[in-house]
Image 1 (cartoon, rainbow, N blue to C red):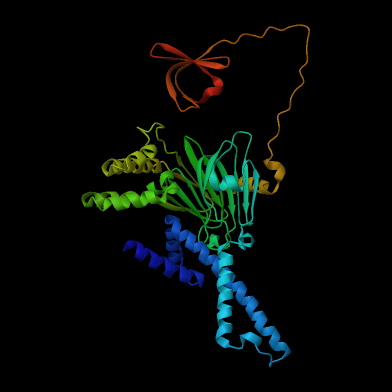
Image 2: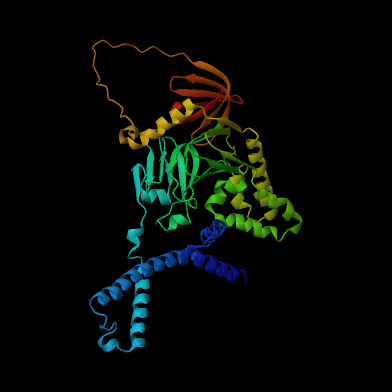
Length: 429
């Protein structure tokens, strides 16, 4: 019954959309249906192609009907074997059906493709399929239809959650980006209020309304700068990565609640926004979410494991919510001064300068041989005291730390461990 009701709702919304009569809330509902149900997404694409084909056929048919009338009004529309009006109409219907099949096969799809220009270590395939992970010597620059331009800076990790393929699809599906870490600069020129770009990070959604945004996301904190427009910023559990990658997960949790009515009221509030605000010519800064990397402590990793046990899963969600609430308490909003905006505009101006995104290559200095050998001065060990050292493989060690040349020596519970400098990610002081 539910599937039938959903199908009827989809058909009703789709008919309104094809005639351009949908309201914003109806388009939002249609977008939700095709996002959650792939079978409806396929039907949506076919409907759009069919509509485009019929419009082109109608234009051609009108031309055929109008031009002969200019020469002679006595010329029959259906000469010869088409003097039977019913056979003629049947022939036209057959032609329309044939054209609809052609459009469903996607022959004219090429004309609908969005213009997407990429520069750097990414291309259209990686944008739609892979994580974009830049190192210290790489970047990714993307320009979409002269309406959205964004750049992923070095040492960043970003996932494109949603990227439309056709111009028609952008009316339903805007651009969605998840920033795991690093820096992102985005400039959006809004031409349609229904199409909005969304950026996600740290359990936060940033919904742009034609603006410029500069994001800095590190392990310690993240900062959002918004100017030349505005953005709605919301925080909550539903904006965490597992729910962004798998829309069915939130739906599964909600359905599971129906089987536990005594817990339903308590856990329905899990999905409520924890904070909501609007930024315009201002910045928002707060602590980054911190979850342990191992599956025992990390609720993000434990979520999939707990789906078979609703009670444990609810506890995991509750833990996530408390962490976001705690992080939100550190939020600090600051109005951008004129000099701040000028600095940000300087950053944006480099978009149009291809040379500004090319990182300088290291110059190889010639090796000069000398007869006299100079004995290098031996470095003395530096005692750093009791510190926590974090390695690139995710492990952490806490103890008495000594730095010696290109390595560290840490003493933990009476045992010494040697760590190369290249394997160290950070040291907490």
